[in-house]
Each structure stands twice: as C-alpha cells, then as structure tokens.
Amino acid sequence: MQQRISRRAFAGAAVATVTSFAILRHARGDAPIEIRASLDTAPSHPRNVAFREFLGKIEAASDGQVKTRLFESGALFPDLQVVKALVQGQVEMACPGTWTITGFVPDADFSQLPALYGRTIELVHQATDGKAGQLVNEEIANKLHVRVLGGWFDLGFNNWYSTKKPLNSLADLSGMKLRSPGGVLNSARIRFFGGIPTVTAWPDVPLAMSQGTFDGLISSNESTNSSKLFDSGMRHSLQDNQGLGLYVPLVSQALWGKLGPKLQETVSKLWADSLPGWRDNTAKSQLRAREELSKHDVTFVDVPQAERDAQRAKMLPGQEKIVADAHISPELVKLVMTDVGA
Image (cartoon, rainbow, N blue to C red; front, side, top):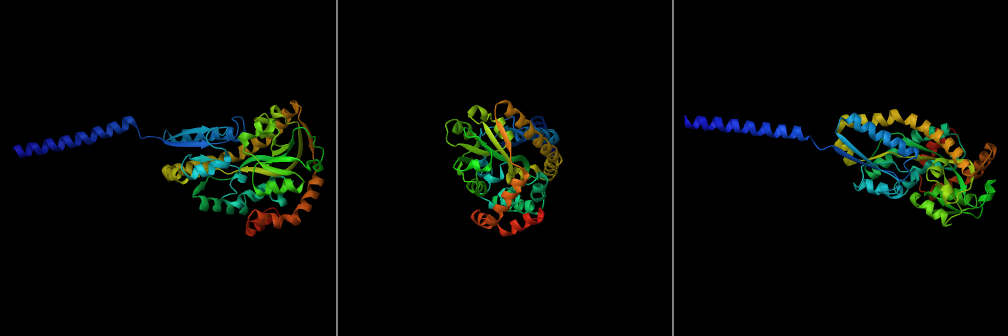
C-alpha cells in the first residue's frame, strides 16, 4: 500500500514539474530571432528607407518571432567590410553594392561593363534580373555561403561630380583625381576618360572631399544629396548614366537556418513583393535629389544620348581586356550581351 502511494506521489510530482516548466516557458516566451542589418548610407537614403520598411514588415509578419535592428551610416561596418562581417556572424543582414563584392566574386560588378554604359534602366534590368544576374547570385551564394534574398536593389545611375572644376563635357574629366566606389570597372572607366581613380569608403567621402583629397567622384544624385556633399564643396555634375548602381540583399546562412521554411518563405516573398515599388521610388528620388542639389547651387550638364552611344562604341574594343583585368568570366559576359541584345 505504501509502495503504491509513493508511486502515485512521484507520478503526480513529475506531471506537476513538467506542467510548471511549460507554463514558465509560455510566460517567458522563446527568445526572438535577432536580425542586425548594416548599411553605410544615411538614414534618408532610399536604401535605408526601404530597409526600415522591410524590417518592420518582417517583424509584423513573424508575430514576435523576429526582432530587428538597423545600423545606419556605417555605424557597424562600411559596405567595403560588411560582407566579411556577414560571413563571420557579426551581422545577419546586409545589402552591399555590387562593386564591394568584387574582391570575393568578380562577376558581381557586371552592371559597370562598357556594354552597359549609357543604357536605359530597363535594358540593364534585363541583365540583372535575367540569366546574368542569376549566375552571379549562384556564385555569391556558393562562394560566400550566404543567402541572396532576391532581386537587386537599385541605387540609380552613377554620374560624375566635382568640386572646383566645372564639368561641361566628358573631356573635362581628363587629369582629375576622382573618387571611385571600388571595383576594377569603375577605375577603368575613370582612366578611359583620362582621370585618376582613388578608392574611398563612402562614410569617409564628405571629409575627404572637404579636404581636397580628390577633385570629384563617381556617385548618384541621391547619394550625394542625402550625404549633403554640397556642404563639402561639391558644385558641378556631368550626367551620363555611366552605370547602374545596384545593391545585393544578403542574409547570413546561420540566420536563414534559424528562420525555418515558413519564415524563409515569408521573408523572400516580402522582398519580392516590395522590390518593384522600391525601384520606382528610387528612380523618383534621383530626380528629386537633382532638384534639391540645384537649390544648393550644384550645376548640371547632361551628356547627349548620341555622345553616350559614341563613347560606348569606343569602349567596347577594350572590354575584353577590362574583363580579363577584373577576372570576370567570359561566360557571364556572353550572358550579359545576350540579355541586352548586344
């Protein structure tokens, strides 16, 4: 009789213990999955605006399972360092420019190829969203062991900007020391027009410009406006749509595994559904930025389309050498030329 009571008491105590732990777990809740996202552009930049929206959508859709934090203006890492940080687990999400990935995947910067100089945004998208872009995404995922979230985010077209020297034609670039965002193709284009390339991380640009480290730079209307480079001495711009700047959305493999199939599908769909609107907003913001820069006494000169086409024709004979110097695969170049019908 005593043995039966002891067994019953033990069983009851075990059930009570399990139940109390379950209640405690439910009360406390599982710790949410943390996503630290790193961007090196200013909070007003379209990429930052889009990412704040995107991270907010992820939190809402996860029903408390995910907690996000956005680090802006290079507070954690400049884009030139963020890929390494992502691989090492120091951040979970980033969206670096293609030109900053070339040290790992040289094919990533193909939007700066001479064949795409001065082209329309629709034509460039045929390559970035087509077979060429798909090939690069596979290379990035396989080489870096990260997840490419989806289509690339538009920065907008890169153009020329200067401090003291007026830019009335492409010939005016000769002899100028010009800041390059990085990548062999950007530097090659600067040299093609007679300039001297110097690579500078974006967060360091305002101070370097004000100190005269370079005479001008490659950038976009929105980037120069959101960083208020007119306060650092920028006064002139020559617009030739030389290459579409693009950002690649990356997620660490560790985070992707934590999310699980359901949240993975949700995050991917949120990005895909939002991207067309973001691209449209970015295009509009580039136009608004030009208007704002004009109000701050920045002068603009547009290179005629016929001149852009003529310059592209001059660049193309040298494309094979540039491709070799940049270690871009001939297979990718063939896909690009096919995608754009060149």
